[in-house]
Amino acid sequence: MVRLYFGSVRFFKHLILTVTALLIIVPTVLCILLAVDNGKKSDEIDRLNSQLSAQSQVSQTSDDQSRTSSATESSDNVKAEPSVTESVKPETSAAPETSAAVPETTKAPETTPASSSAVESTDSSVSSGADSYTSLFPTLYADKYDGEYENSENTVYLTFDDGPSVLTENLLYYLRQENVKATFFVVPERTEYCYSLLREISNAGHTIGIHSASHDYEKIYASVDAFLEDFNEAYEIVLEATGKAPDIYRFPGGSVNDYNEKTRDDIIAEMDRRGFTYFDWNVDSNDWQGYGWTTLYTNVLKDAEEFSSPVILFHNTGDRDNTVLVIEDIIKALKNKGYKFGSLSQKIKPVQF
Image 1: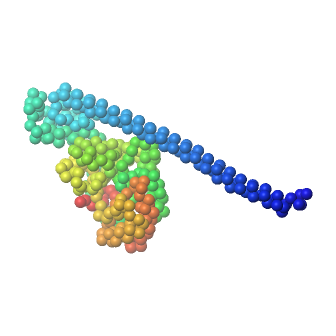
Image 2: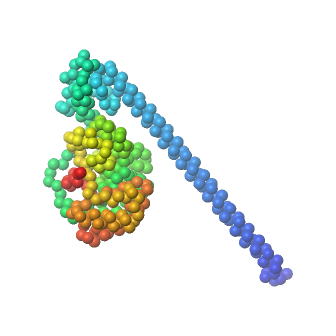
C-alpha cells in the first residue's frame, strides 16, 4: 500500500495541497509578524514624539517664565529694555549698581539715573542694550590664539554642518577608513543620542565647532543678545557631552547672509572679544541641493583644485546620504592629487567672507 501511495495521483494531490497551504500560511505568518513589529515601532515613535512634545512645552513654559521674571525685575529697577537672558543673572538685576563681576565696558547702570530712565532717548536705549550683552554668560569665553598660523599649504579641510544625525556614524566610518580628521560645526540637542554622537566625534579626534542651537536665522540674528543666547546653549551641550570647550564657530548661512546685515559686525566684534574665531568656506559641495554622487564628486574636485587650502562645506543632516556615499571617493581622489587633510583650529588662518 505504501509503495502504491507514493507516486500515485492521491500522493500528488496531497503534495499540491500541502505546498499550496505553505505558500499561503508562511507569507501570512510573516505579514502578521511584520505588522506586529511595525506596530511596536510606531508605538515607540509615538512615545518618543510625545516625550519631545512634552519637553518642548516645558521648555516653552520655562522660557515664558524667564521672560516674565526678567520683565518684572527690569520694572522694579527702572531699567531700559534689558536682555531677556538677564533673568539668569539675579545678582546683576538685584544690584545693578555693582559692577565687580562685569567687564569694564558695562557702565550703563552706574551712569544712568533711575529718575531719567522714563524719558531716555532711543539712542540711549540702544546703547544700553549694546552694553548689556557684554555682561551676559560670564563663562562664555575662549583662550584666543595669537601666535603664528600653521602652514596649511596643500591641506584639505573637510567641514560638516548641521549634525550630528543618524548618518554621523557612517560618515565617521569612512573618515576612519581613510585616517582623515575633519571638522563638525554642530547643531546639538539635549538628548542622550546627540550626546553620544558628540562624544564619538570628539573621541575620534575630530574638531567640534559651534554652528547654532536653533538654526533659526530670524531668531539668532535679531540682536547680539539673541546670538549669544543661542550660541551659549550649543556651547554648553558640547562642553557637557565631550568635556571640551569649543573655540571656533560657523555662522548659519555663512558670515554674510540676508539676515545678519544689521547685527553682523557687532556679533563678530563681541565674539572676537570673547576669544572665538569663525570660519566660512571656499568650496561649497552644494550637497544641500540634493545632488547625486556624480555631480558632488565632479564639482568638489573641480573647485578644490583652485585652492592650496580648500575648506570644503558639506552637511551632516539625516537626508544627506549622497554625502556619505561620495566622501571616501573624494578623499581618495584628493590624496592622489597630493593633498593632505586636517581639522580646523584657531591655529589655522580662517577663511572668512
